[in-house]
Image (tube, rainbow, N blue to C red):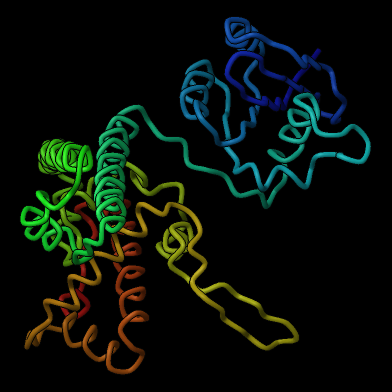
Length: 341
């Protein structure tokens, strides 16, 4: 049995494995492999190509299999779906594993970069911080909705809400006063946690030379630099900066036919967190332009005048994404032209 390609359908406890030989003939079909059996099964195989859908735990398994000499490639689930023979076998784990095994061999398949452990450590900081931020936003929205039931309507901005709500707490009847007070205290605790994670992320960014180089770019602070480094690594999984901008979702969708090029709205594909950080950085650049006369500021100001505020924001964010790739890929060898900085 000479297995050259393996497709693995990941799950929590029961996995499906499908292996084929050099002729594409299925020589290994195991629809039910337990978690403790999966690694011994893969270890005993000769080095081969392993395809996995990018999902929870996929990067861990990819690093593990790669350490035993296998070539591992991750794919987005939506790119695997067309290779599932749904009309013949239906949707099940075995069919998914066979589809993954087929999809990973396609010459034009797009793969997901495998993250190293240190990258996922930094991303854990970001995901935890982002969870606290979302929880804080939900808490303030809950406060605003609850007090509105008693005829108290306050400004939407958090600063305005915190400044004015103290004068209305005594107007809340019964247990409503205690509930809103507890929610405000919970929001204060979240503020403290978010500040702590901001310090941890900033410390991690300062300790890495690549992050420090990224922070030299306008619109890229410690949080954005740390997230870019953790997501892109050294940038070797992308051929150029345009691919990075497209991967983050900062390029227009294309609907071209008959030799006529039609560009639509921004795709908003890929990592929403990275995209939001780059967009916020671009907005800060435009708000701080003032009367600056360096090349980059003149370009940004002219772009805003010609194309409008939001298109300028997206263009600056895409430019930063492309330049971030160049900084990470070429390191000290990359020197940006001052007129384009």
